[in-house]
Image (cartoon, rainbow, N blue to C red; front, side, top):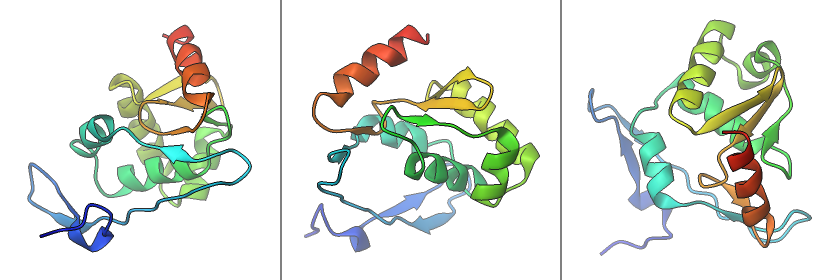
Length: 135
C-alpha cells in the first residue's frame, strides 16, 4: 500500500524513452501569499511532455513566480538563473506557450497557468480571470 503524501512512492517515467526520474513533492502551508495548490490533471499533462532541462526551467519558473503567477525575467536572465542555455530556454518557453501552460504577457513577463499552480484563497479566481484575458 502506498501513501499519497509520501514522495518516495512517486517517480516520473518519460513515456517515449522510459527514462525514470525521482519526483520530489513539496507541500507548503501558510506564508504571506497563502498556500499553494496544484491540479493533478494539469500537472500530469505537463509532465507527459517535459524532461531534463525543460523540467528544470519550468520548476525554476514555478518557484520564482510572484503573487500574480508572473515571472518577470528576460529569456537571458531565466537561462542564467535556471542554469540552462538560452536556446533551450527560448525553445522551452515557446513549447510551454504552445501547450497553454504559460502565456507571454510582454517581453520579460510570463504568466504561469493558474490551473497548474496558484496561490490559495481568492487568488485562483482572480488569476483565472487574468489568464483568460491574456488568451
